[in-house]
Image 1 (tube, rainbow, N blue to C red):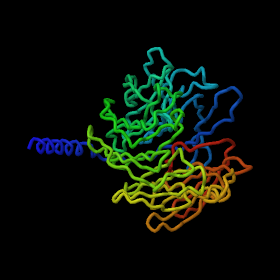
Image 2 (cartoon, helix red, strand yellow):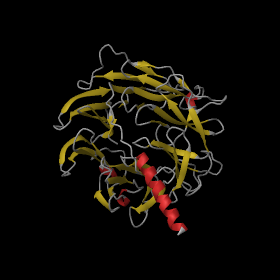
Image 3 (cartoon, rainbow, N blue to C red):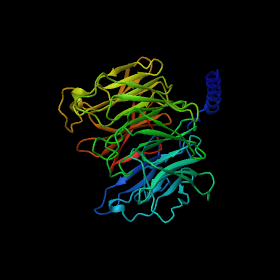
Image 4 (cartoon, rainbow, N blue to C red):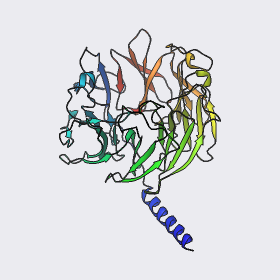
Length: 454
């Protein structure tokens, strides 16, 4: 009887908690400007520099009377505020090489409408020099409502902190908590209910020592207090290969669009872990899904994972050392957890934010089953599919290295690198998929305020 009462109480508490976190996902607001970041060719023994240029979304020409802005050297990548008003980056993002004398990390905010930098947000250092610390992507993330920034830093002794920064109140002191593990990546739930840090351990908690096999977990934090709610152990997740440091294995992460589940695909094993995060403090490893009967014979060390906009499907790709061992793009049905190969060639399948389309990326012929690997883009292909019928609508890029696919308003943009030529930015009209115009970039560039497809 006591067990039944306890079980009923736990169910009641879990249900109450679940209801409290089923919040509406805020709609993204398109940024007020389309911004191109261009990287200046690196000078010997000097940090890499870049500039920000506002460009016309239709003509791709520089916006008149809007001067280009210099980015502070040694800065991180940019994160776009979900409400579309600010760009965030971290100055002093690295202390390696030419950035050895860079000052301690500080958060920089660019007001896109005013086209001016705000005052830097300093982090209390206690005399230490702080640097962002995450292996996958910038260690910086926005809350869905656009008010808060989250940041992971480390100092000279590898003492790590997770920060909460209020961007709505100038002069507010950032809040931080200690991390006693090696962080792999930082994510925020789409509904803002939780902050996730995927991580694990090394022999002495440094990035130089050997990773502890199977030590991976996801630590889940309250988004406003940074109180650690729980650590959910995963199914023997590795953050480093045997006898190697953390970072030699790259898991893939995706989240359910409604914030109800957190997914991790192992970088070195064909396995997807499903974490139920609907009830705070009751988050749990719900199940593990095998992607194939046996592990790749030639091994793998990274994986890509994405969820469909309705949350009904997961798309997975695990590159292998030999193309003949590659299964192509796999799909997991979230309703039945059935796994199937949906495309034996493709490596990406992304959804359009502006209509009923999917974008499919095929690798070069040199990376297809039975082929020898080489740096030959022949056969690489970026195409558009109807999301309902999966019929091909158009081919946007062929035989080039398409490394950036993004959308802004009613346009889709592709940046590719063509052999013997500079980088090319091409604009397409959504629906008709006609090429509207192109802009040749004299240096590598990136559309940082357009919404990336993958």
